[in-house]
Amino acid sequence: MRVSLLIILLFFHLFKLTAQTETSLKILDSVTINEWLVENKVPAIAIGTIEKGKLNPVRVLGKIQGDIPASTQTIFDVASLTKTITTLLTLKLVDANSWKLDEPLSHYWIDPDIKNNPLHNKITTRHVLSHRTGFKNWRRMNKDKKLTFDFEPGTKFQYSGEGFEYLRKALEEKFDISFQKLTDSLVFKPNKMNNSQLTWSESIDSLNFAGTHDKYGNEYVYKKSSKANAADNLLTTIGDFSNLGLNIINQQYLDQNTYREMIIQHSSVRDGISFGLGWIIFNDLSNNEYALFNAGSDQGINALIVLLPKSKRGLIVMTNGDNGRALAMKIIGETLGEIGKEILGRF
Image 1 (tube, one colour):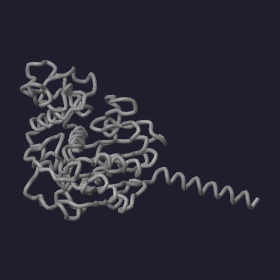
Image 2 (image 1 turned 180 degrees about the vertical axis):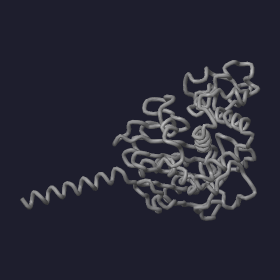
Image 3 (image 1 turned 45 degrees about the vertical axis):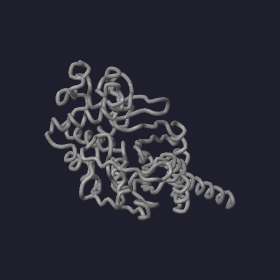
Image 4 (image 1 turned 180 degrees about the horizontal axis):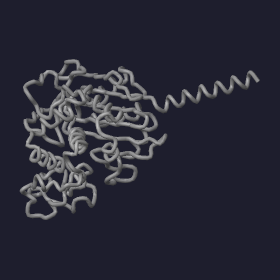
């Protein structure tokens, strides 16, 4: 009887350890990460992790500006992760009943390139955030460099930065406030993103900027943005963006109904991958989990965020190199374990 009791207790102890493992992260050691930086010729990396709804100490490794050690104050350009900011700003306005997801944006803005096309009356915020405007990623991809519709808004998926810029102009027209000021007051300040900006300013110490690098680790000449873009060029730190991820996971930023609207499928990308409002959604993962995912990639820039709201886990990665995507994906698989591998398997 005593032996049977010991076996039962051992079983429950092992079950508890297994359950803990399924909801914990593997924190990679610095030696391994530094080796990967060298192998991939990526000068620096910043990593934020969230476990059980709490932010672990952020980590920044490698060097910037040649031989300056990167730090938690290092500023990274995170490219299309800017769209996450625009999404949350817009949904916060929806929370306040100051903006409607299904109101035509033509009530506030009509791009001159499409003013004679009646389809402009059909574009809504919901279409923008779920990438169903009918626009290409950028108008410069069209032969005449002008904005045009590839299909009727709302009928199918096509990733578009132009859509987010269209939304920015509509927001600025309605509220008569710059996009930068709207973002400062409704996203950056509430989420304690004190080191984040949409444009380059004199307050940024250039020696604290991560820069951008090619596949050999050579530095590109960085083009400093002087005008806010709703789809690109966010300058931020790993601490700032991790704070944002934490508040999303803990549902402390948006109202419950708006959050629910954000995470449901609005457009299908392919099997196992869909778009909610502003987020790529991976549904039906192990342990009844789902993931919110966004990534940014420009010349010499690769960054991503993965959030697992049900188990309250998250991973944020920022790099300053063309080879950073492969490195960031490897960190997903190692840090998030089986679910990380499931996510990678759907790309």
